[in-house]
Amino acid sequence: MKISTERKIKIARLISKIIIGIRSIFGLSPITRVCRRGLRWSLDLKEGIDLAIYLGVYEPETIKALQSIVQPGDIVLDIGANIGAIALPLANFVGVSGQVIAFEPTAWAYAKLQKNLSLNSNLIGQIKTEQIMLLNEGKEPPSSIYSSWSLADEEDELTHPTHKGRLMTTDGVRGISLDRYFEEHPVQKIDLIKLDVDGYELDVIKGASKTLSRYQPKIILELAPHVQEEKQQLEDLLFELKSANYRLEDLTNKKSIAMKRDVIEKICPQGGGINVLAIPQ
Image (tube, rainbow, N blue to C red; front, side, top):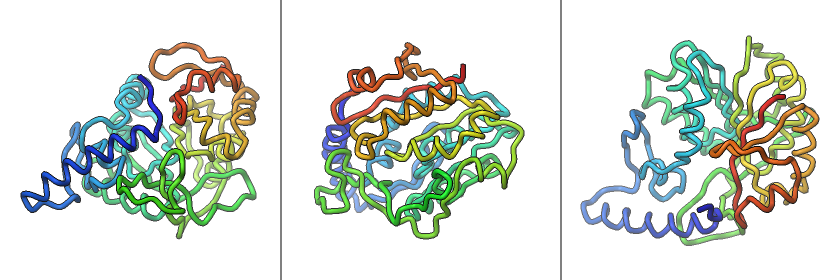
């Protein structure tokens, strides 16, 4: 059953309180290091993504789908890498002959990404990290974007009213288009793009027209009307993907999805989204 992000956060807050409470009885901090699926993590159990990794329930269907799509030797882009929850498993999938390029704009999440990568020294050669915000050419990055999903009860003006993300600073970020990035850092191929940027998908795609035309990578992205409609971009995003000659299918059940706003809204849970695979035709 698909549930909204807000509902997921409410459940996660309850679980977080229980686990942190039990740990405090034994004098243990909410900050912990664990090994999950052969990967080592430094986690803050007061954070939503961290807690999901700790429980072994972070995006299992997405990771399973990625494992079936990604091959050793692939070059994969993780755009919106956050703390590395997808980038690190991807590095395992591409192997020593492949590469993951992980883009994360916020200073907070980028530092955590670097920390988690440092705990997995065997993967350092397989992941290239960039504190970059990918945008359409000529646009500047905002001073802050949502990258923390705090499980604290307190909410303020920095907390999104629907998806409950928390704004974090982009201090130190560079704003650049994907096309410009690969003019500066050319590669032989791009096999897959994982795109999860909470409403900035259209900017990324518009700044990647040459990249998509040249390399024709598959793209995994979340369609979340409640986020994308804030910037009035869902229809434009679908138009750009269609213009780049992509079709959509559900990531988990492989069913074809019509590239129409009303169809997307119908299959998305209220206040939530679905992960789709965009495939070049």
